[in-house]
Length: 225
Figure 1 (cartoon, rainbow, N blue to C red):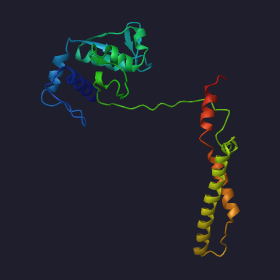
Figure 2 (cartoon, helix red, strand yellow):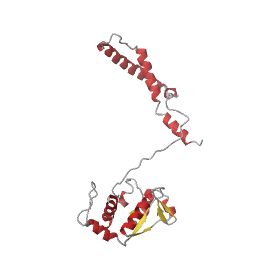
Figure 3 (cartoon, rainbow, N blue to C red):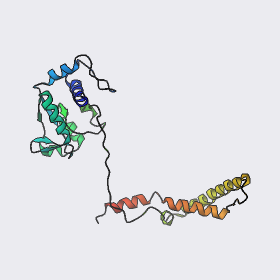
Figure 4 (cartoon, rainbow, N blue to C red):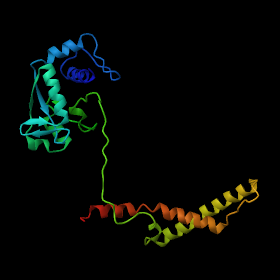
């Protein structure tokens, strides 16, 4: 009954003030269920949607997709009618445009809409009934961000700062290693040299890449293969 309660609660919030819904448990109090059924029976709703297959889209002048499968099941259960206020080409625009154009004449939006501040003024969201993860597979870029950060044609000021970073961080690591060796009780303890610490820092920076290469890599993605 959860899906029916969610649907009825959403309708009640839009067409009557005789009940209210808690956000935590989707409980409709007093005789809200009967009130909702009577309120929507034989009522015709204006419906808007967005072209977002396979969730929602128009097949001719009829709605289709997962959202409409659920909505049609609710229509059959509660015996209401609906009319889609858009043409097919009007669904292939942004959600904000649909909200601004059809927000005042639409009773129900049959689609999966993100929580967007730009459309809040024209829309009351139903209770969240699920979440979906989307995974995007992209072509591997030709360039890599690892290994070339320090090979960029930086200015002298930047190179000076890089050298200072190597010396300061390398010296700090050498000091930490020195303190550690003083308190270690192992017989075969090993003390790293300052040169080794500096090379360690250099290798760490080199492995991390730079903030410039992601821009280069992104531009490479946008080029046609």
